[in-house]
Image 1 (cartoon, helix red, strand yellow):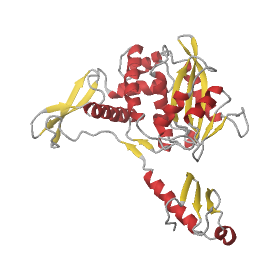
Image 2 (tube, rainbow, N blue to C red; image 1 turned 90 degrees about the vertical axis):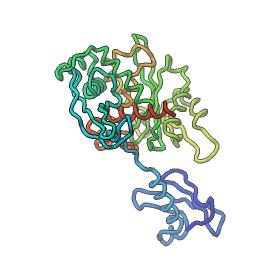
Image 3 (cartoon, rainbow, N blue to C red; image 1 turned 180 degrees about the vertical axis):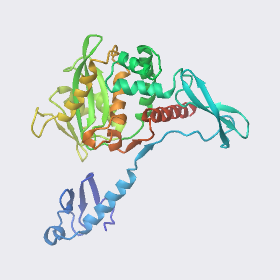
Image 4 (cartoon, helix red, strand yellow; image 1 turned 90 degrees about the horizontal axis):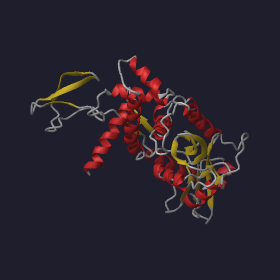
Length: 365
């Protein structure tokens, strides 16, 4: 086992350099898909034994995997009284109103009765109606078709109300999910797609993880060639807490300049920028093209795109990452593939509840 400090240097999750104890030279230890860990030291190459360098790397690798604990976001269950903080609660009937039914509780210690509707306080409609509207809209229905579908559930609202719900809860959830740290891969992709805002052509720049397809960051620009993508890449570092080892883009100069300012470093491992992608072959950007296709498929129903700071695009980003299962991920969402699991029958409600509580705690602090 390597005992000297600095003996093991991690290049990425599957590549390590381990210094020899007898010579001042490093050996490469690489994780292969066929035989597992492989070392360039003479013991391993000539005799085929698991050398001490591999044992050292396995220990370091397993330790890192233990540190990467999954984040589980659970529905919030009422457990204490908001008046006296007692946990001695009992159900105390149902409050009926036009928006639906809400459970009431009574505290056995202070005898106060109350109802708690976390994240949906003072809303005229119940959480199921609000979240159903968001699910319908981001699944591809227009605002007016969403309104008509809600009528079948006995919920009568205008299309503007649906848009207001989207704006309110997207803003709430975005503050919360941006604080989460998804375990993205070391390869990212960036691309741009043109969309219309009130009839004017603008460009949506997006940054996405290559493997789990987690949508990391986005921004809207007036132009394509003159845009500075540095803010997009900086936002990517803030969300993930890291920089990519490899960035794949097209040849747009905006990406090259922003890469040099945000991701390039003289320290190793150095980030690499691949900007010579083609429409097909090994060096393609099909992952981002499919993501752009999702946006294009819904562009015709996104009639709420009036201003560049619209809540619809961040809302769709949340839907893509946390709500929409992907066939290529074996039915998982990109967030689940990155170690973030949202539990509960209604994931929208779970996310809104936790975002609301997180916002309250931050305000108190």
